[in-house]
Length: 480
Ligand code: SF4
Image 1: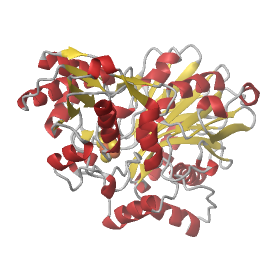
Image 2: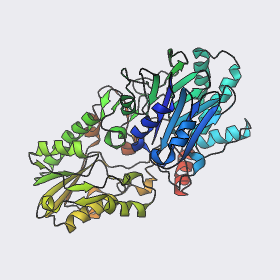
Image 3: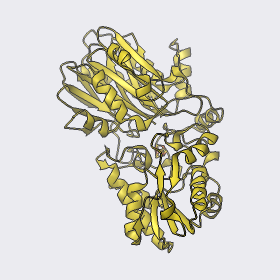
Image 4: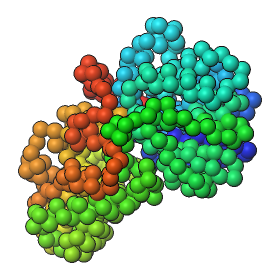
């Protein structure tokens, strides 16, 4: 998971990129970067939070009225600085590009670029692959005037090669800002206008902050090109059928900020509905807790509705130290375990001698849930029930969410009773897959639910899946 932003307008682009990246910080804390174009490219990127990477001195240097920015989540490995985005290529035209997603055929494309196109690649990042493919196709056009239709026809050739998820923003020097989304619309991408010009970002919260009024989703398979005069050209590079659409459902469960709207669905509202579905499921299990407590912060909205459905009190029983990063995306098991206690502390008065229903967004490896239940037991809870408002996670995400290998999912080969025992809960309740889709409010919109169901929206040759798994096990660094 990453966050991207692209800006073109009258004012200094970095004045918009920097606050937008802060609004997208939840999408990745591993690295941050921005590239702008004035009469040459300017770039700053590195490992760390947005506020760590940027300072008044380097922000001052990032001049120009067009630019792109990126935040990256911690990778499997240590996260090397070479993989930080954006990437720049100087010919043809000069392009700076930032990407969110993961190319399933990354290794094949990398080999093709090195062996057949004699390209030198400096990172393990698929953004560099997309950038090189785009530059090759634009080079074939070789036109001084880069009309939108030429950009779109070059892009169509790039789409023919890519398998996987990609939401991309790039600036073409002195020409325009290009934003595009994969044919399944797996990763979110929105665009809008403000007084300065055009802005694109992973989530609408970033555009809210920039004062954009007409915020619209880039459709699955669509590209939007904005020239230096601010004229928009839109083109459907690939037209997906209803069946092809597969927006990541986990954005609504966990990743996205609750104040974002993705593909017309408010994330906060989706979480309320997920709470309603989970509440009904808890009722069928006959749960009668004294109070419902969320695992902060993501589960708060759902937990409130679970309490309403069960007709019991909603309480804050775990207080979060907000200066600790989200544990789901910390790189090593040991770090995750220690982070739980660093991050959460129970309010004893709400817990002692009580029957508590804890509501969480998901259970990945089970270690965090186990630690939290341990904390509550130490605080004197009488009974502790655990409910996840997403179904059991069983399959790896190959689209850029580093949920590890198959073997690391606790639900992969274990029954719910065994998981309940492992995490130390008196009862464990999961959302049903149907409840998940109903709760998000799917309607006629298609969603990727592959990490729950194992049904992937794109081709994934077994050979490539094996390679992806092996790569993760080796703990090499990739970025997405
Ligand atoms: S596999 Fe899961 S996390 Fe990955 S894109 Fe699909 S729904 Fe999202």
